[in-house]
Image (cartoon, rainbow, N blue to C red; front, side, top):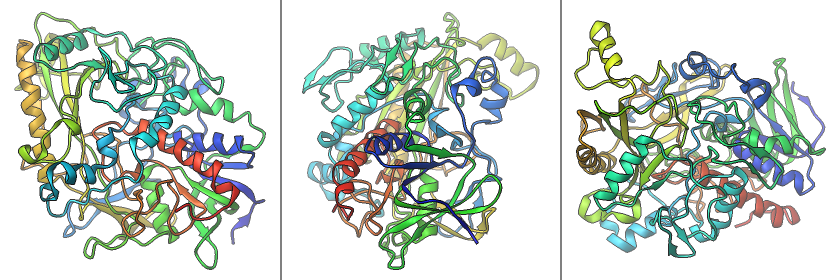
Length: 588
């Protein structure tokens, strides 16, 4: 029988970006707040301190900051006819674990969703007609507009100290920024990162072709900065250890560097690590949550009562907890009914590698978001009816690291091992760059999450099951981007180039890393028949449960999700503080 702890005002499941934001907001509102994190405690010192973190083998290859499939995984299949099998070795995506979550090991690409993306179905129907939406595609509006979210995008950027160049200030285009972005009320808190050689080459080639290059908005800071919580960050030193690593230099925005140091000083905030939440407990009428049950580090089962439950774990885990707890109706692809698990989506990426005999890029000098970008083929800039797909992509060239195990680019036709491979590495290391497409992925009736009927986790609960494969719409989108990228590459006169894009024969492959940008499953909206949570991220069915994170996305953006996830967290926190706490009830 579970041991019962003293009741708290609010319990937060997960202590990454959204858990830290909601922890701070609720603590500042005067609530007694407890956060439960399934992983270990982590902070810059001692966990990321030099030289401990600069270990490519431990963290870059052996994934020291990631979840272990033996402890937490899901099963995966590509169609309703296949039998799902457990994801036993991390590859396609890399969920983090421990305090800070994936906010510890991200690269720092920090974007705002485009206005069109937040009302995608309406935009498509109004602009091109409903007939362009393929059968089985289930795209939706988010239920919140860009104009409503703009102040919360702004706040997250200023909490993080984002480095960048505004392209649209109050509707006025700014030279050197992204002219296609939604209007913002003020610029970024810090100027862009310095441009490296590959970025300059891409900038010049893209501009010569009539495109509009700009520096990527970056959570790698270009200068020292102090945010609203008094947290101090320093300028990036371009060490090249961002993705898969914690920052050694207090230079990458993370929950640790931006929020947690201040939050931990709040007398009404507490957190417990190695606390694995099993389910949200519901009242007899199933209309409110009474708290959560979790397993502590000793293996004891504990019930934590709370008046307010915030699900702030990773997207998969939030959806899994809702399914295990009976919050909302599980989605059925056969009938199209139900909402929990609906509209799982991923990301569509591709790229072209260029090799030069007369340029050396000094690849050991890198930062997670040191890149130049064009957004000329974003969702708002493409004629979907003409091109035959719905979606968009930003195109970029960045230099992120020169790590000797993971960054050995060689031309096409090079042997995979032996003397020929060694000779190619000797010739081409430091003489290559890439141009990448980072694109949207639409949602479909048969791409979803549910409980696996066969496989169970270490606690005897059904595993989460993913059903997902690439669709023709998204293949056409990535091939369209290839047709725009390769002419840019050719114009730069490389000795050779090699491209990698998914084609008509491609199926989803769990082995190569793609992105950790998994979305959907607990989607937001204004219709409880179509969405799991309302526009304030509140469960339609259990009003004192709020669900954070990218699970709210009805389909995936063309951008990295963190900026939008952060904005939604502040948007939801405002609704909780200003409205819900005064009168707990369904907000819609």
